[in-house]
Image (cartoon, rainbow, N blue to C red; front, top):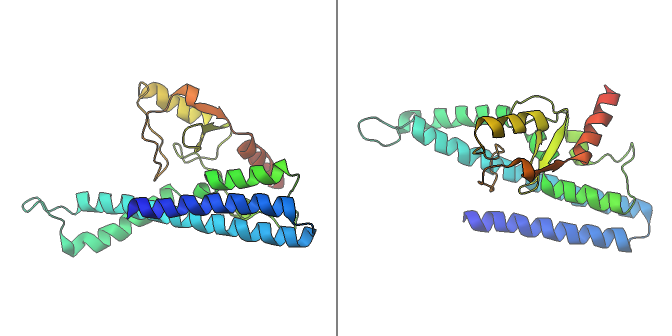
Amino acid sequence: MEVGFFGILENVYEQVNESTTSVLESVEDANLKAKYLKELEEILVSCVTTQHKVAITRQAVKETIARAQDEETQEPDANIYDDLLEESIGELEVDSPLEGAIAQAASLKTFKDLLEQNNVSANSDGDLVATECSNNFLDPISKKRMTDPVRNKICDHVYDRGSITSMISKSKNKFKCPAIGCANRKPIKVSDLKEAPDVKRQLTLQKRRQ
């Protein structure tokens, strides 16, 4: 079931990319093009949101099973399970806010790259959903606003350069991607990191607006 769910999401991402390319190349009317692109991006945001919630819930279930385990029976205590699960979900949502997941989503980055490659930009009446939702660009390690973002070439998640290089050094090259639900379980190497100019640009724009 797990493979099926994430497989469906991957298919949706691919289809949205294909549709985006088709709209950019084939739709002549500017207003109609903007409308279609907005709808496609909303689909991506919806998928990223669902994927994030599933990852949060899966992690919360794992933590709850461990916390609710009865010492004698070695089985989860049903009397406290529901409360602990709700508590775990709440804590994970605070530690890994949806806004951060949307800001770092590889599917939305690909979408924005397609727009930039075709000289399409958002205006004041049609801001991208990801931009509107990204009130904070939080480093998943320090939980602080990033200042020097770098992207993992393997999984596409973004971290602050200082935080990730420090963790790689402290862990003696055993530190893995901290993003919840990340499928990349290989230790991160400094050579896996690259500049993230798109995130840096958004950080600069956000700072100017403040």
